[in-house]
Figure: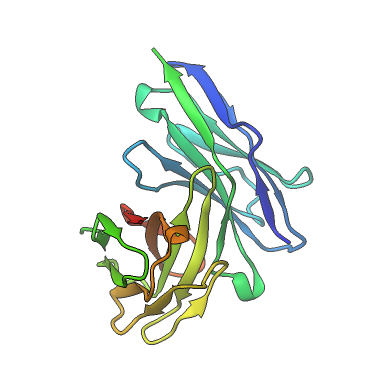
Length: 116
Length: 111
């Protein structure tokens, strides 16, 4: 069965520093997609970044980058130059396959707190 | 563009009551989804639709029904609400199996 594991329930980072949020996944499929979403205290889910399993380069979107290590089955999110507005829950997710292709399988999330 | 909108934002029900949650998207997406989020957990898929007139079960479909009569709308129904259905419900939509865009969520409390 497919699974997403986020081992850091909470993280602290100093403003303007970089932070890495860990995500490992388990799948036997060759083709899959990995996503990161941000959920601020207001509750909405905001798409941040996507990595396809066949993408050779790590995905980047502004201050967000995804450190994709396929052999280790990890897809860590790196936020550079943290800002106070980055304080939120962050969820790693993987697209399901086969009959569950529409299913985004989520980890339990990491709560990031940015200190001024 | 409003993106994905959900109605209502918050609702309190008594056990056994019924209600319908409405999701609307203006991005012309084919695929739409309903998730629930419980404390300490990520989102779990309830039902989804790959086009107008089609629906399919997700991970936790029991106690819910859905309909997709129009491409832009996806309705989630609770026929007989139970306290276990207290949750935050998110609707999402996408062009295909890739990036899903979420609505703001609906907080449901079942007493």
